[in-house]
Image (cartoon, rainbow, N blue to C red; front, side, top):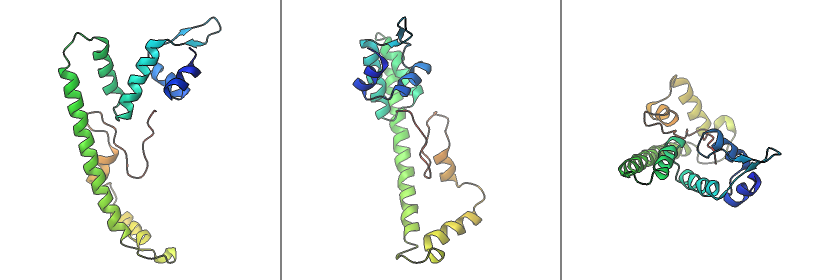
Length: 165
């Protein structure tokens, strides 16, 4: 099948399929004489596996590890269990961070109970006041936007990091 067919069958954008090939998650496809990529059932199955991992918010590094184990089925899956346990820990930490963010936003929202001129908006005034008082990100803010030792990419509260599909 051609890349468009693979994209349609898996619900994956063509650019993402090419990206997964470049990153080594998906093996390079054979080419026709006209230089079109030709994919087979193995590509379809592997791409579906990658997509399932991505739907669970796994990083590319985590997916690479899982693919290595999938490609060597006779090995022990202890490391797979450990990887998933670590991923669950990352998710739990992110939930805690997002709950803290929600609380901060609720406190901020309480600063302005009714519509008025922007100059008198409690939210805008609070955000402006906080901007002059804080010259460096708070501990929670820098933690939200940083990648820590485990290789997890955290989503910043202001702008979600672009992630492949």
